[in-house]
Length: 487
Ligand SMILES: *[C@@H]1O[C@H](CO)[C@@H](O)[C@H](O)[C@H]1NC(C)=O
Ligand SMILES: *[C@@H]1O[C@H](CO)[C@@H](O)[C@H](O)[C@H]1NC(C)=O
Image 1 (cartoon, rainbow, N blue to C red):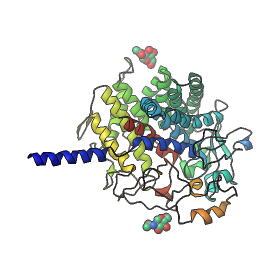
Image 2: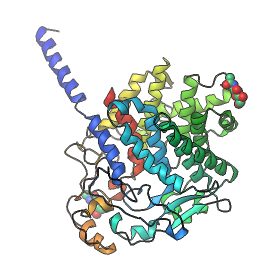
Image 3: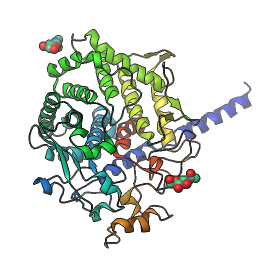
Image 4: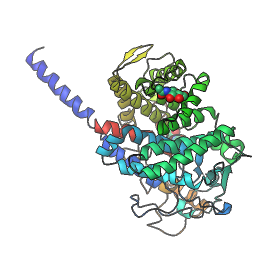
Protein backbone atom coordinates (compact mmCIF):
# COMPACT_ATOMS: atom_id res chain seq x y z
CA UNK A 1 0.00 0.00 0.00
CA UNK A 2 1.45 3.39 -0.96
CA UNK A 3 1.45 6.16 1.58
CA UNK A 4 -1.33 7.87 -0.38
CA UNK A 5 -3.42 4.70 -0.15
CA UNK A 6 -2.64 4.55 3.51
CA UNK A 7 -3.92 8.09 3.85
CA UNK A 8 -7.13 7.33 1.89
CA UNK A 9 -7.64 4.14 3.87
CA UNK A 10 -7.30 6.16 7.05
CA UNK A 11 -9.91 8.68 5.91
CA UNK A 12 -12.31 5.89 4.99
CA UNK A 13 -11.89 4.37 8.42
CA UNK A 14 -12.59 7.72 10.04
CA UNK A 15 -15.73 8.15 7.94
CA UNK A 16 -16.86 4.61 8.72
CA UNK A 17 -16.22 5.22 12.37
CA UNK A 18 -18.15 8.46 12.40
CA UNK A 19 -21.05 6.87 10.53
CA UNK A 20 -20.99 3.86 12.78
CA UNK A 21 -21.20 6.03 15.88
CA UNK A 22 -23.71 8.47 14.50
CA UNK A 23 -26.75 6.67 15.91
CA UNK A 24 -27.60 8.20 19.25
CA UNK A 25 -28.77 5.19 21.24
CA UNK A 26 -29.06 7.30 24.40
CA UNK A 27 -31.69 9.55 22.81
CA UNK A 28 -33.55 6.52 21.47
CA UNK A 29 -33.51 5.03 24.98
CA UNK A 30 -34.92 8.20 26.55
CA UNK A 31 -37.70 8.27 23.94
CA UNK A 32 -38.51 4.59 24.45
CA UNK A 33 -39.37 5.34 28.09
CA UNK A 34 -41.41 8.46 27.23
CA UNK A 35 -43.58 6.18 25.11
CA UNK A 36 -44.81 4.36 28.25
CA UNK A 37 -45.95 7.67 29.70
CA UNK A 38 -47.99 8.36 26.57
CA UNK A 39 -49.69 4.96 26.93
CA UNK A 40 -50.73 5.50 30.54
CA UNK A 41 -54.34 5.01 31.53
CA UNK A 42 -55.82 6.47 34.71
CA UNK A 43 -54.86 9.49 36.77
CA UNK A 44 -51.56 10.88 35.56
CA UNK A 45 -48.94 11.76 38.19
CA UNK A 46 -47.58 15.27 38.68
CA UNK A 47 -44.19 14.27 37.24
CA UNK A 48 -45.76 13.10 33.94
CA UNK A 49 -43.45 14.24 31.14
CA UNK A 50 -45.71 13.66 28.13
CA UNK A 51 -47.86 16.74 28.38
CA UNK A 52 -50.29 16.20 25.53
CA UNK A 53 -51.97 13.41 27.53
CA UNK A 54 -54.55 13.90 30.32
CA UNK A 55 -56.35 11.74 32.87
CA UNK A 56 -58.60 9.05 31.41
CA UNK A 57 -60.72 5.99 32.23
CA UNK A 58 -61.07 7.02 35.87
CA UNK A 59 -64.05 4.73 36.42
CA UNK A 60 -62.47 1.50 35.18
CA UNK A 61 -63.60 -1.38 37.40
CA UNK A 62 -66.57 0.48 38.84
CA UNK A 63 -69.06 -1.91 37.20
CA UNK A 64 -67.43 -4.72 39.24
CA UNK A 65 -67.11 -2.67 42.40
CA UNK A 66 -63.30 -2.49 42.27
CA UNK A 67 -60.69 0.06 41.30
CA UNK A 68 -59.08 -0.94 38.02
CA UNK A 69 -57.75 2.47 37.05
CA UNK A 70 -54.21 2.65 35.74
CA UNK A 71 -52.25 0.29 33.52
CA UNK A 72 -51.51 0.76 29.85
CA UNK A 73 -53.50 1.18 26.66
CA UNK A 74 -52.28 -1.52 24.36
CA UNK A 75 -51.55 -0.13 20.91
CA UNK A 76 -53.44 2.35 18.74
CA UNK A 77 -56.66 1.79 20.64
CA UNK A 78 -57.85 2.38 24.19
CA UNK A 79 -58.35 -1.18 25.43
CA UNK A 80 -56.42 -2.52 28.40
CA UNK A 81 -55.59 -6.05 27.26
CA UNK A 82 -54.05 -7.81 30.26
CA UNK A 83 -52.26 -10.57 28.36
CA UNK A 84 -49.96 -8.45 26.14
CA UNK A 85 -49.72 -5.84 28.93
CA UNK A 86 -48.22 -8.47 31.23
CA UNK A 87 -45.76 -9.57 28.54
CA UNK A 88 -44.78 -5.93 28.02
CA UNK A 89 -44.07 -5.52 31.73
CA UNK A 90 -42.08 -8.77 31.80
CA UNK A 91 -39.91 -7.50 28.94
CA UNK A 92 -39.48 -4.07 30.56
CA UNK A 93 -38.47 -5.81 33.79
CA UNK A 94 -36.07 -8.13 31.97
CA UNK A 95 -34.50 -5.02 30.44
CA UNK A 96 -33.97 -3.58 33.92
CA UNK A 97 -32.73 -6.83 35.49
CA UNK A 98 -30.19 -7.38 32.75
CA UNK A 99 -29.04 -3.84 32.00
CA UNK A 100 -29.49 -2.08 35.32
CA UNK A 101 -25.96 -0.61 35.34
CA UNK A 102 -26.26 0.68 31.80
CA UNK A 103 -29.69 2.22 32.48
CA UNK A 104 -28.23 3.85 35.56
CA UNK A 105 -25.24 5.25 33.67
CA UNK A 106 -27.65 6.69 31.07
CA UNK A 107 -29.74 8.27 33.85
CA UNK A 108 -32.78 6.25 32.83
CA UNK A 109 -33.02 3.65 35.61
CA UNK A 110 -35.70 5.56 37.51
CA UNK A 111 -37.75 6.10 34.36
CA UNK A 112 -37.48 2.41 33.51
CA UNK A 113 -38.60 1.39 37.00
CA UNK A 114 -41.52 3.86 36.75
CA UNK A 115 -42.55 2.21 33.49
CA UNK A 116 -42.52 -1.18 35.20
CA UNK A 117 -44.40 0.13 38.24
CA UNK A 118 -47.20 1.69 36.20
CA UNK A 119 -47.95 -1.85 35.05
CA UNK A 120 -47.34 -3.74 38.30
CA UNK A 121 -49.44 -1.33 40.42
CA UNK A 122 -52.30 -2.09 38.06
CA UNK A 123 -51.76 -5.86 38.15
CA UNK A 124 -51.92 -5.80 41.95
CA UNK A 125 -55.22 -3.88 41.79
CA UNK A 126 -56.49 -6.51 39.34
CA UNK A 127 -55.46 -9.34 41.70
CA UNK A 128 -57.22 -8.82 45.04
CA UNK A 129 -57.97 -12.49 45.75
CA UNK A 130 -55.49 -15.36 45.16
CA UNK A 131 -57.57 -17.00 42.44
CA UNK A 132 -59.21 -13.99 40.78
CA UNK A 133 -57.49 -11.83 38.17
CA UNK A 134 -58.97 -9.14 35.95
CA UNK A 135 -57.55 -9.57 32.46
CA UNK A 136 -59.20 -6.91 30.31
CA UNK A 137 -60.94 -3.55 30.61
CA UNK A 138 -62.71 -2.20 27.55
CA UNK A 139 -63.56 -4.30 24.53
CA UNK A 140 -61.94 -4.44 21.12
CA UNK A 141 -64.97 -4.34 18.84
CA UNK A 142 -66.80 -1.42 20.43
CA UNK A 143 -63.52 0.44 20.95
CA UNK A 144 -62.47 0.03 17.34
CA UNK A 145 -65.77 1.44 16.09
CA UNK A 146 -64.75 4.80 17.51
CA UNK A 147 -61.75 7.05 16.93
CA UNK A 148 -61.47 8.91 20.24
CA UNK A 149 -58.88 10.33 22.57
CA UNK A 150 -58.66 8.24 25.75
CA UNK A 151 -59.62 11.39 27.67
CA UNK A 152 -62.96 11.58 25.80
CA UNK A 153 -63.91 7.91 25.71
CA UNK A 154 -67.63 7.08 25.71
CA UNK A 155 -67.16 3.42 24.71
CA UNK A 156 -67.98 0.60 27.20
CA UNK A 157 -65.36 0.01 29.88
CA UNK A 158 -66.48 -3.43 30.99
CA UNK A 159 -64.04 -5.44 33.09
CA UNK A 160 -63.40 -9.15 32.49
CA UNK A 161 -61.85 -11.65 34.89
CA UNK A 162 -60.65 -15.21 35.35
CA UNK A 163 -61.31 -17.28 38.49
CA UNK A 164 -61.52 -20.95 39.54
CA UNK A 165 -64.69 -21.61 37.55
CA UNK A 166 -63.50 -19.64 34.51
CA UNK A 167 -59.72 -20.02 34.57
CA UNK A 168 -56.92 -18.87 32.28
CA UNK A 169 -53.50 -20.32 33.04
CA UNK A 170 -51.71 -18.36 30.29
CA UNK A 171 -52.96 -15.01 31.58
CA UNK A 172 -52.36 -15.87 35.24
CA UNK A 173 -48.86 -17.25 34.53
CA UNK A 174 -47.80 -14.34 32.31
CA UNK A 175 -48.92 -11.93 35.00
CA UNK A 176 -46.95 -14.04 37.51
CA UNK A 177 -43.89 -13.79 35.23
CA UNK A 178 -44.30 -10.00 35.01
CA UNK A 179 -44.60 -9.61 38.78
CA UNK A 180 -41.69 -11.98 39.53
CA UNK A 181 -39.44 -10.26 36.98
CA UNK A 182 -40.45 -6.89 38.40
CA UNK A 183 -39.69 -8.18 41.92
CA UNK A 184 -36.12 -8.88 40.76
CA UNK A 185 -35.94 -5.46 39.10
CA UNK A 186 -37.10 -3.70 42.29
CA UNK A 187 -35.10 -5.74 44.79
CA UNK A 188 -32.16 -3.32 45.07
CA UNK A 189 -34.38 -0.26 44.86
CA UNK A 190 -37.36 -0.94 47.12
CA UNK A 191 -37.31 -4.27 48.96
CA UNK A 192 -40.79 -3.81 50.46
CA UNK A 193 -42.36 -3.29 47.06
CA UNK A 194 -40.37 -6.18 45.64
CA UNK A 195 -41.71 -8.53 48.35
CA UNK A 196 -45.25 -7.38 47.68
CA UNK A 197 -44.84 -8.16 43.95
CA UNK A 198 -43.42 -11.57 44.75
CA UNK A 199 -46.36 -12.54 46.94
CA UNK A 200 -48.75 -11.83 44.08
CA UNK A 201 -46.49 -13.64 41.61
CA UNK A 202 -46.42 -16.82 43.71
CA UNK A 203 -50.18 -16.84 44.18
CA UNK A 204 -50.79 -16.33 40.47
CA UNK A 205 -48.37 -19.12 39.51
CA UNK A 206 -50.16 -21.45 41.91
CA UNK A 207 -53.53 -20.39 40.44
CA UNK A 208 -52.25 -21.04 36.90
CA UNK A 209 -50.81 -24.45 37.78
CA UNK A 210 -53.92 -25.67 39.55
CA UNK A 211 -56.49 -24.29 37.13
CA UNK A 212 -55.30 -24.93 33.56
CA UNK A 213 -56.98 -23.66 30.42
CA UNK A 214 -56.75 -20.91 27.82
CA UNK A 215 -57.85 -17.53 29.09
CA UNK A 216 -59.96 -16.68 26.04
CA UNK A 217 -62.38 -19.49 26.91
CA UNK A 218 -63.17 -17.35 29.99
CA UNK A 219 -62.59 -13.88 28.53
CA UNK A 220 -64.04 -14.51 25.09
CA UNK A 221 -63.86 -10.86 24.02
CA UNK A 222 -60.05 -11.24 23.88
CA UNK A 223 -59.91 -14.09 21.38
CA UNK A 224 -60.16 -11.98 18.24
CA UNK A 225 -57.34 -9.70 19.33
CA UNK A 226 -55.00 -11.64 21.60
CA UNK A 227 -56.02 -15.28 21.49
CA UNK A 228 -53.44 -17.48 23.16
CA UNK A 229 -52.19 -20.69 21.54
CA UNK A 230 -51.21 -22.46 24.76
CA UNK A 231 -50.37 -21.97 28.42
CA UNK A 232 -47.42 -24.33 29.01
CA UNK A 233 -44.97 -21.70 27.77
CA UNK A 234 -46.25 -19.05 30.20
CA UNK A 235 -46.03 -21.53 33.09
CA UNK A 236 -42.40 -22.31 32.28
CA UNK A 237 -41.53 -18.65 31.80
CA UNK A 238 -43.17 -17.80 35.13
CA UNK A 239 -41.32 -20.68 36.85
CA UNK A 240 -38.01 -19.43 35.40
CA UNK A 241 -38.63 -15.92 36.73
CA UNK A 242 -39.84 -17.19 40.10
CA UNK A 243 -36.71 -19.33 40.40
CA UNK A 244 -34.60 -16.25 39.70
CA UNK A 245 -36.58 -14.19 42.21
CA UNK A 246 -36.64 -16.77 45.03
CA UNK A 247 -33.95 -19.44 44.40
CA UNK A 248 -36.68 -21.80 45.66
CA UNK A 249 -35.95 -25.22 44.16
CA UNK A 250 -39.63 -26.12 43.81
CA UNK A 251 -39.57 -23.92 40.70
CA UNK A 252 -36.50 -25.79 39.47
CA UNK A 253 -38.34 -29.05 40.03
CA UNK A 254 -41.16 -27.74 37.87
CA UNK A 255 -38.69 -26.76 35.12
CA UNK A 256 -37.00 -30.17 35.24
CA UNK A 257 -40.32 -31.95 35.18
CA UNK A 258 -41.40 -30.06 32.06
CA UNK A 259 -38.14 -30.42 30.14
CA UNK A 260 -39.63 -33.04 27.82
CA UNK A 261 -42.06 -30.35 26.62
CA UNK A 262 -39.57 -27.51 26.57
CA UNK A 263 -41.02 -26.15 23.34
CA UNK A 264 -38.40 -27.31 20.85
CA UNK A 265 -36.73 -24.67 18.70
CA UNK A 266 -39.07 -21.71 18.36
CA UNK A 267 -39.11 -19.13 15.60
CA UNK A 268 -40.26 -16.13 17.66
CA UNK A 269 -40.53 -14.73 21.14
CA UNK A 270 -43.81 -12.82 21.43
CA UNK A 271 -46.85 -11.96 23.54
CA UNK A 272 -48.18 -15.42 22.60
CA UNK A 273 -45.02 -17.54 22.75
CA UNK A 274 -42.59 -17.35 25.67
CA UNK A 275 -40.63 -20.58 25.24
CA UNK A 276 -37.50 -18.81 23.97
CA UNK A 277 -37.57 -16.51 26.98
CA UNK A 278 -37.71 -19.44 29.42
CA UNK A 279 -35.09 -21.37 27.44
CA UNK A 280 -32.68 -18.44 27.48
CA UNK A 281 -33.06 -17.76 31.21
CA UNK A 282 -32.27 -21.42 31.92
CA UNK A 283 -29.43 -21.53 29.38
CA UNK A 284 -27.81 -18.48 30.98
CA UNK A 285 -28.03 -20.09 34.41
CA UNK A 286 -26.32 -23.18 33.01
CA UNK A 287 -23.52 -21.07 31.50
CA UNK A 288 -23.11 -19.23 34.79
CA UNK A 289 -23.18 -22.52 36.74
CA UNK A 290 -25.97 -21.19 38.95
CA UNK A 291 -27.65 -24.53 39.49
CA UNK A 292 -25.04 -25.53 42.08
CA UNK A 293 -24.75 -29.21 41.34
CA UNK A 294 -28.30 -29.53 40.05
CA UNK A 295 -27.51 -29.34 36.33
CA UNK A 296 -29.55 -32.26 35.13
CA UNK A 297 -29.15 -33.35 31.53
CA UNK A 298 -32.79 -32.36 31.18
CA UNK A 299 -31.90 -28.69 31.50
CA UNK A 300 -29.59 -28.93 28.49
CA UNK A 301 -32.62 -29.36 26.30
CA UNK A 302 -33.59 -25.76 27.06
CA UNK A 303 -30.09 -24.52 26.30
CA UNK A 304 -29.88 -26.38 23.01
CA UNK A 305 -33.15 -24.84 21.82
CA UNK A 306 -32.29 -21.32 22.98
CA UNK A 307 -28.99 -21.51 21.09
CA UNK A 308 -30.60 -22.87 17.94
CA UNK A 309 -33.05 -19.95 17.95
CA UNK A 310 -30.15 -17.51 18.15
CA UNK A 311 -28.21 -19.35 15.42
CA UNK A 312 -31.30 -19.13 13.17
CA UNK A 313 -31.59 -15.39 13.76
CA UNK A 314 -27.96 -14.71 12.91
CA UNK A 315 -28.24 -16.85 9.74
CA UNK A 316 -26.00 -19.66 10.97
CA UNK A 317 -28.61 -22.20 12.02
CA UNK A 318 -30.49 -25.12 10.46
CA UNK A 319 -33.59 -23.10 9.76
CA UNK A 320 -32.62 -19.47 9.35
CA UNK A 321 -35.14 -16.66 9.73
CA UNK A 322 -35.69 -14.67 6.52
CA UNK A 323 -34.05 -11.31 6.01
CA UNK A 324 -35.38 -8.43 3.95
CA UNK A 325 -33.09 -7.14 1.18
CA UNK A 326 -32.07 -4.36 3.53
CA UNK A 327 -31.10 -6.90 6.18
CA UNK A 328 -34.03 -6.82 8.60
CA UNK A 329 -35.18 -10.06 10.25
CA UNK A 330 -38.50 -10.78 8.64
CA UNK A 331 -41.39 -12.97 9.77
CA UNK A 332 -44.69 -11.48 8.63
CA UNK A 333 -46.33 -8.35 7.15
CA UNK A 334 -48.37 -7.46 10.26
CA UNK A 335 -46.30 -5.93 13.07
CA UNK A 336 -43.05 -7.62 12.09
CA UNK A 337 -40.93 -5.41 14.35
CA UNK A 338 -42.38 -6.93 17.52
CA UNK A 339 -40.37 -10.09 16.75
CA UNK A 340 -37.23 -8.18 15.80
CA UNK A 341 -37.11 -6.32 19.10
CA UNK A 342 -37.63 -9.45 21.24
CA UNK A 343 -34.91 -11.26 19.27
CA UNK A 344 -32.45 -8.42 19.91
CA UNK A 345 -33.00 -8.64 23.68
CA UNK A 346 -32.57 -12.42 23.69
CA UNK A 347 -29.36 -12.24 21.64
CA UNK A 348 -27.87 -9.35 23.61
CA UNK A 349 -28.60 -11.01 26.91
CA UNK A 350 -27.08 -14.29 25.78
CA UNK A 351 -24.04 -12.61 24.20
CA UNK A 352 -23.20 -10.99 27.52
CA UNK A 353 -23.58 -14.29 29.40
CA UNK A 354 -21.31 -16.02 26.87
CA UNK A 355 -18.79 -13.24 27.22
CA UNK A 356 -18.84 -13.26 31.03
CA UNK A 357 -18.29 -17.01 31.10
CA UNK A 358 -15.69 -16.95 28.30
CA UNK A 359 -17.79 -19.06 25.98
CA UNK A 360 -18.75 -18.86 22.35
CA UNK A 361 -21.82 -20.11 20.54
CA UNK A 362 -21.58 -23.24 18.40
CA UNK A 363 -23.89 -22.97 15.43
CA UNK A 364 -24.20 -25.33 12.46
CA UNK A 365 -22.76 -22.50 10.40
CA UNK A 366 -19.70 -22.15 12.61
CA UNK A 367 -18.48 -20.76 15.91
CA UNK A 368 -19.78 -17.35 16.85
CA UNK A 369 -18.18 -15.12 19.45
CA UNK A 370 -20.17 -12.69 21.63
CA UNK A 371 -18.95 -9.66 19.71
CA UNK A 372 -20.40 -11.05 16.47
CA UNK A 373 -23.73 -11.43 18.24
CA UNK A 374 -23.68 -7.81 19.36
CA UNK A 375 -22.73 -6.72 15.83
CA UNK A 376 -25.79 -8.54 14.55
CA UNK A 377 -28.00 -6.92 17.19
CA UNK A 378 -26.64 -3.52 16.15
CA UNK A 379 -27.50 -4.22 12.53
CA UNK A 380 -31.14 -4.76 13.54
CA UNK A 381 -31.35 -1.82 15.94
CA UNK A 382 -29.62 0.48 13.43
CA UNK A 383 -32.07 -0.61 10.75
CA UNK A 384 -34.99 0.23 13.04
CA UNK A 385 -33.47 3.62 13.84
CA UNK A 386 -32.95 4.65 10.22
CA UNK A 387 -30.05 2.77 8.64
CA UNK A 388 -32.23 1.16 6.01
CA UNK A 389 -33.03 1.57 2.30
CA UNK A 390 -35.72 4.19 3.03
CA UNK A 391 -33.58 6.00 5.60
CA UNK A 392 -36.62 6.01 7.81
CA UNK A 393 -36.62 5.55 11.56
CA UNK A 394 -39.35 3.18 12.69
CA UNK A 395 -39.09 4.65 16.16
CA UNK A 396 -41.48 7.59 16.19
CA UNK A 397 -39.84 10.92 17.03
CA UNK A 398 -36.31 9.65 16.45
CA UNK A 399 -34.22 11.47 13.83
CA UNK A 400 -35.81 13.59 11.14
CA UNK A 401 -37.56 10.98 9.01
CA UNK A 402 -40.07 8.88 10.93
CA UNK A 403 -43.72 7.82 10.46
CA UNK A 404 -46.03 10.85 10.59
CA UNK A 405 -49.43 9.18 10.40
CA UNK A 406 -49.10 6.61 13.11
CA UNK A 407 -52.27 4.55 13.71
CA UNK A 408 -52.90 5.81 17.24
CA UNK A 409 -56.04 7.47 18.51
CA UNK A 410 -54.53 9.78 21.11
CA UNK A 411 -51.61 10.93 18.98
CA UNK A 412 -53.70 11.59 15.86
CA UNK A 413 -56.27 13.89 17.53
CA UNK A 414 -55.52 17.37 18.86
CA UNK A 415 -54.40 17.23 22.49
CA UNK A 416 -57.09 17.79 25.10
CA UNK A 417 -54.69 20.32 26.63
CA UNK A 418 -55.05 22.42 23.47
CA UNK A 419 -58.72 21.87 22.73
CA UNK A 420 -61.01 20.68 25.48
CA UNK A 421 -64.13 20.25 23.36
CA UNK A 422 -64.85 16.52 23.13
CA UNK A 423 -64.18 14.73 19.87
CA UNK A 424 -66.98 12.22 19.30
CA UNK A 425 -66.83 8.61 18.21
CA UNK A 426 -67.40 9.22 14.48
CA UNK A 427 -66.19 12.80 14.44
CA UNK A 428 -62.75 11.39 15.25
CA UNK A 429 -62.72 9.38 12.04
CA UNK A 430 -63.99 12.26 9.90
CA UNK A 431 -61.83 15.04 11.31
CA UNK A 432 -58.67 13.24 12.34
CA UNK A 433 -58.29 9.67 11.12
CA UNK A 434 -59.02 10.66 7.53
CA UNK A 435 -57.02 13.87 7.66
CA UNK A 436 -54.12 13.79 5.24
CA UNK A 437 -51.70 15.48 7.64
CA UNK A 438 -49.13 14.44 10.24
CA UNK A 439 -50.39 13.48 13.70
CA UNK A 440 -50.63 16.59 15.90
CA UNK A 441 -48.88 14.77 18.78
CA UNK A 442 -45.56 12.99 18.32
CA UNK A 443 -45.73 9.57 19.97
CA UNK A 444 -42.05 9.55 20.96
CA UNK A 445 -40.46 6.13 21.33
CA UNK A 446 -43.27 4.11 19.75
CA UNK A 447 -42.10 1.34 17.43
CA UNK A 448 -44.55 0.89 14.56
CA UNK A 449 -45.33 -2.43 12.85
CA UNK A 450 -42.59 -1.65 10.35
CA UNK A 451 -41.65 -2.13 6.69
CA UNK A 452 -42.58 -5.00 4.38
CA UNK A 453 -40.15 -7.66 3.15
CA UNK A 454 -39.02 -5.29 0.36
CA UNK A 455 -38.18 -2.60 2.93
CA UNK A 456 -41.13 -0.45 1.87
CA UNK A 457 -43.35 1.45 4.25
CA UNK A 458 -46.71 3.07 3.53
CA UNK A 459 -47.14 5.91 6.02
CA UNK A 460 -50.89 5.86 6.38
CA UNK A 461 -53.24 5.63 9.40
CA UNK A 462 -55.41 3.12 7.56
CA UNK A 463 -52.44 0.81 7.07
CA UNK A 464 -52.50 -0.56 10.62
CA UNK A 465 -50.38 -3.61 9.80
CA UNK A 466 -47.41 -1.30 9.31
CA UNK A 467 -48.31 1.94 11.05
CA UNK A 468 -49.72 0.78 14.39
CA UNK A 469 -47.31 0.67 17.32
CA UNK A 470 -47.80 -1.60 20.35
CA UNK A 471 -46.48 -1.48 23.88
CA UNK A 472 -44.91 -4.93 23.46
CA UNK A 473 -42.76 -3.65 20.54
CA UNK A 474 -40.69 -1.11 22.44
CA UNK A 475 -40.22 -2.93 25.78
CA UNK A 476 -37.34 -5.25 24.78
CA UNK A 477 -35.49 -2.36 23.17
CA UNK A 478 -35.27 -0.50 26.49
CA UNK A 479 -32.59 -2.91 27.66
CA UNK A 480 -30.89 -3.27 24.30
CA UNK A 481 -30.64 0.50 23.77
CA UNK A 482 -29.20 0.95 27.26
CA UNK A 483 -26.60 -1.73 26.50
CA UNK A 484 -25.65 -0.12 23.17
CA UNK A 485 -25.66 3.42 24.56
CA UNK A 486 -23.34 2.48 27.39
CA UNK A 487 -20.80 0.54 25.33
C1 LIG B 1 -30.68 -29.31 44.29
O1 LIG B 1 -32.09 -29.29 44.20
C2 LIG B 1 -32.75 -29.86 45.32
C3 LIG B 1 -34.24 -29.86 45.05
O2 LIG B 1 -34.56 -29.86 43.69
C4 LIG B 1 -32.39 -29.09 46.57
O3 LIG B 1 -32.99 -29.68 47.70
C5 LIG B 1 -30.88 -29.05 46.75
O4 LIG B 1 -30.53 -28.20 47.81
C6 LIG B 1 -30.20 -28.56 45.50
N1 LIG B 1 -28.76 -28.72 45.60
C7 LIG B 1 -27.93 -27.69 45.53
C8 LIG B 1 -26.48 -28.06 45.67
O5 LIG B 1 -28.31 -26.56 45.32
C1 LIG C 1 -51.42 2.82 1.91
O1 LIG C 1 -52.37 2.31 2.82
C2 LIG C 1 -53.68 2.83 2.65
C3 LIG C 1 -54.51 2.30 3.79
O2 LIG C 1 -54.47 0.92 3.91
C4 LIG C 1 -54.21 2.46 1.29
O3 LIG C 1 -55.49 2.99 1.11
C5 LIG C 1 -53.26 2.98 0.23
O4 LIG C 1 -53.69 2.55 -1.03
C6 LIG C 1 -51.86 2.49 0.49
N1 LIG C 1 -50.93 3.12 -0.44
C7 LIG C 1 -50.04 2.44 -1.12
C8 LIG C 1 -49.16 3.24 -2.02
O5 LIG C 1 -49.94 1.23 -1.06
